[in-house]
Image (tube, rainbow, N blue to C red; front, side, top):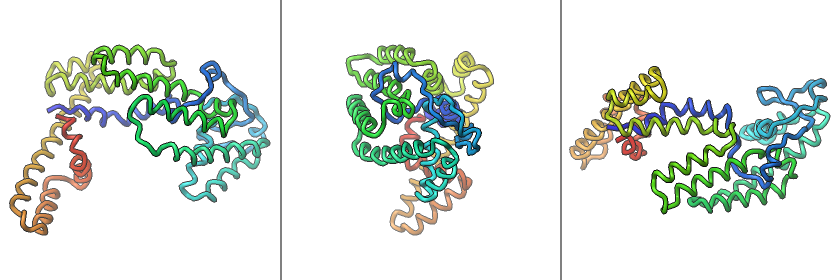
Length: 312
């Protein structure tokens, strides 16, 4: 039994850490051309490593060069307080903004950014399937941003998003091209990824590694020497040992679920006319076969049959 999606689950946390360390913002796209996107702008704002605005007079008088992610991260930092209430959000924002000489400028920008977040919800009402659908949505975002922000502000807030999103749409268009073979699609996507800026290449590297792992384990026998050798050649012996161990553990887990499903079918047949007795019996079966934390995991698999099919 193959485990396909298992490796993705096992390494997802690692991939997220790598992604967050280098990823560009990818929510949408700007109308600024690529030459403007590569520029760096100066704004009289400084933040510390945790995303807080320094509230000392000394720091507030400094003028530092801001990268796009820094400005947007700052605004999103305070937007997150909205979950505790609008009053709490403004209280936190004003506490850090008040000592700054440019507080009124920053406040006015924050207000427009909140309006932008609100209007974004109106763009997410339809399902997007085709590359052209995503392209149309990005064009709508272009219009919305141009209505709320200057070109300078768009560059500061959404610097790399146009580059990233347009590349992503092109990859989607390649994969949706019915005239291309599977091999041709893979080759063209690889070529397209090679055209990405270096920071974006680093961002997609974990995903590419996961796909490579999935390709190896789905084309070799379970826990075979051939599987181990391919993994070791690609990722090293230590990683190969861990991946094979995870594979074996997941295989045991899936077999356990299959056994549960078989016994569940027997109970349904036995207590088909008595729902109360069946409910008690299935609860007892879960307690016998699974620990408390495993029961939660079991529910995820039972609610998503595709997880079991993908692992076969």
